[in-house]
Amino acid sequence: MNELLSPKTAALAAKPIKLGFLGVGWIGRHRMKAILDSGIAEAVAVADPSAEMTREAQILAPDARIATGLDELLDQQLDGIVIATPSAAHAEQSIRALEAGLAVFCQKPLGRTASEVKAVVDTSRTADRLLAVDLSYRYTQGMQQIHKLIRANALGKVFAADLTFHNAYGPDKPWFYDKTLSGGGCVIDLGVHLIDLALWCLDFPSVTAVTSELRAGGERLADSSQVEDFACATLTLDGGAVIRLTCSWRLQAGCDAAISAKFFGTEGGASFENVGGSFYDFTVARLFGTSHETLTQPPDDWGGRAAVGWARRLAAGQRYDIACEEFVAVAEAIDRIYAQNGRAPRCP
Image (tube, rainbow, N blue to C red):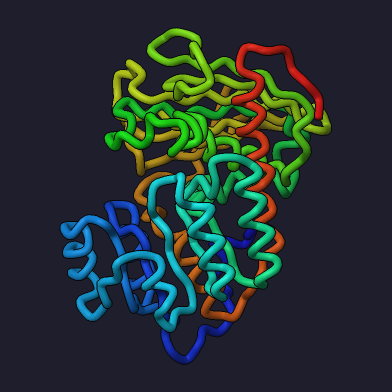
């Protein structure tokens, strides 16, 4: 997964791959459009409980069959399935599709807990089918640049990173606020991206200690059934690097969103930051003492790249990818953030 934007891809299949789309709300349709626009795949069938959403999907794929749900999708002659449903269903739906012999591209989080995520990854390995998760910020030009700088040792030894994701709006669907359905609040919704970016850039070292503080409405969570709308956490990694994470819903941020990832090394730093409160536009700079050098600026049409990258690999015949085990490491870190809320750090 580390050559995400490489211009050299394997030869694609002579015919477009056949895909099913489970969940075609806004994000599901966006990923669907990106894949179809690439010419790599055709939409054979779509399924969504909302008739309005399926009508919108038919605008993109007028020949696609409207299925009643996952069972009917699995009856089609598909190569893979794109899942964009509520979080509680992700693991079970992914496992069923993989066991049926289909490749899977799933929205994050892949599961509500590390055990759910591990079960999906184990099924991918056993079924020998390609599995990917829409950890889309990896695919921005900016994070690709930072990833390359760190891997080339251009920043020296990276010993610290600060990552932030404040969404001043918060989710608009009730299930996000039910922990049994969502798995948690802003950490599993937004922090998943931050944890993934930090560990991915640093080549997934082990997490040796975690501390965290979770809040809802400005107060510490009263019980384990609540979902947090503000979180800060510190992850200490094998080798000594310290990662600080902060994320929130509906914070008084003064703008739509505040998103950043900053990495600090012995020979320099690198900064990825959103522009003007945008959810989509980012700038990246190299940092040198009191000066900086801008490396990338908007525009960058990155939102569908993870989905297209998965489709390209599927079309080229790729099956199980050992890199999907990284999803388990991210989920384990999330589990520990929830477990360590307000507690002293605990080594594994």
